[in-house]
Image (cartoon, rainbow, N blue to C red; front, side, top):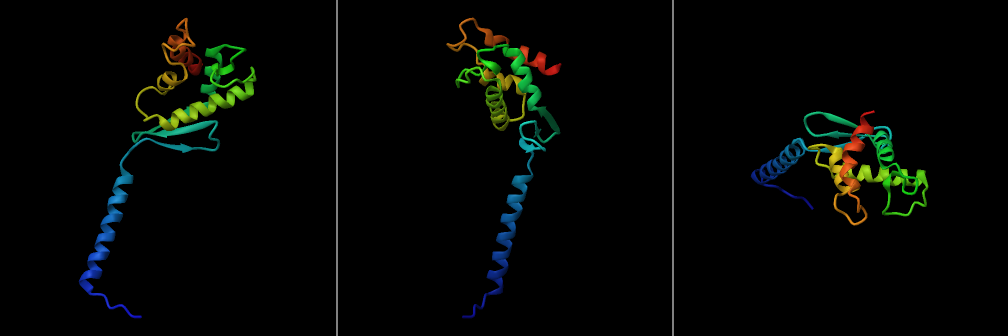
Length: 145
């Protein structure tokens, strides 16, 4: 079976496909937050917000959370899952939480404050002494050390 195409239709089809390629390319070229994993996704994640890169050391942040939480019964402040005080298991959950928050973060503002709004929200029932109000400040302090 042989197809004889009208040259005008063929050129129109090629131009339409080219226009679609250009539109898709331009849509992907716009700067927006993206995550790029380096050698180990549990160690570092790079956040490209279109203006530069912000290196977040996930292990260092997990260490800061551990120090700020300062709990043997609930290492890393993990209360949503019973870790039975297992520090290694709690650390994995903490790192998973950090990585999940990095994926959800839009790259604007302070990441530790964003994480704190999820990790230690203010006014929750399991925080009757309002200790979560100090979480962001404490984690920032230990993260900078």
